[in-house]
Image (tube, rainbow, N blue to C red; front, side, top):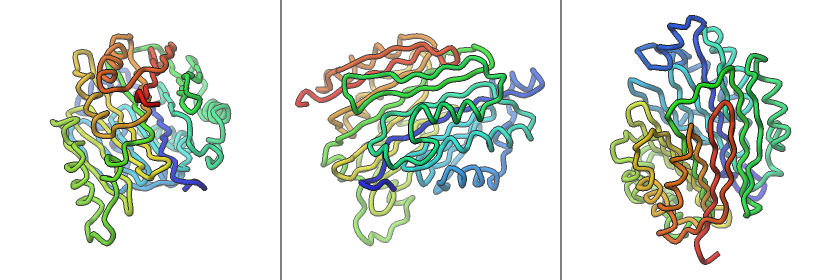
Amino acid sequence: MAVSGFEGFEKRLELHFFGDDPTVMDQLDGHKGLLGLRLLDFDSLQQVLHAVQCTVVSAVGNHYFDSYVLSESSLFVYPGKIIIKTCGTTQLLKSVRPLIHHARHLGLSLSSVRYTRGNFIFPESQPFPHTSFKEEVVYLEDSLPKGLRFRKASVMPSKTLTHSWHVFTASTDIDLGDVFTIEICMTELDKASAGKFFRRPADGKSGDSAGKDMTEATGIGSISPSALICDFAFDPCGYSMNGIDGDRYSTIHVTPEDGYSYASFETVGSRGDDVARVLKKVAQVFRPATMSVSTTSAGREVWGRVASALEPLGLKRRSCAVDEFPAAGTVVYQTFSNRRK
């Protein structure tokens, strides 16, 4: 818990692994029935999360991956990759070494890393190694095997001083697919929208049942209508959701307190997906005053749909930064604010 309020902005870490046997590596990438990292027992995952300083509050899985809602955001475990996203004062990067250690015992080696985050609302409350981006990069460099030779760290700016995008990538090789990632950060949520993420005192509901009520009341279920949703409502306020749709995930996290309200949405997709529809739904659910959208992909076609989706809703694009990362592809970071600002 930060001194002035809860830190909503997440830190996000994505680790990819491959097997020593090239056949295993191909199967992991193709999800052909191998469990890979999904063989990690729950006790080992809990040990990793303990180092990060968070816990599992709800979980669900399917044929492709396992999804965990955490006390501070989310964890996704695929056969060949792990994605951890944590907020508050968690020490996310302390998960790198133990995850590499556990994966090695499964015969898996680290092949790529991607770390991203926005600007913290309460940076002075962040513990080591998250006291600065420079400190984070040094910690990552020291934690990674030397074989990850394609490395780059960059801070992508915007015209809003409180919004910039921090990216670190490293990889053993350059192998970009057609899958893209969209990370959305929203601040100054509409008060009526944010109010739906507060629980009534002594409502007698579990976090799971209260979460389902919030999903329905806010319209979150309509963002990814075909997804299986695992949701959780915190007491007295706050909300987290993981959506599972085949081999794809989506996730939402909300810190609704007035003065530092924040919400995030993240999803993965591929060419031909209706990105504009999803963006419009997200903006309509939360009605933020400020919104940043980061897209990571092999090309630039996805980011071009962002402004055309949001500007008709009254969100004007204020800045756009583009950078190339050898281990991740093209990252495009755009910021928007409503026309009243």
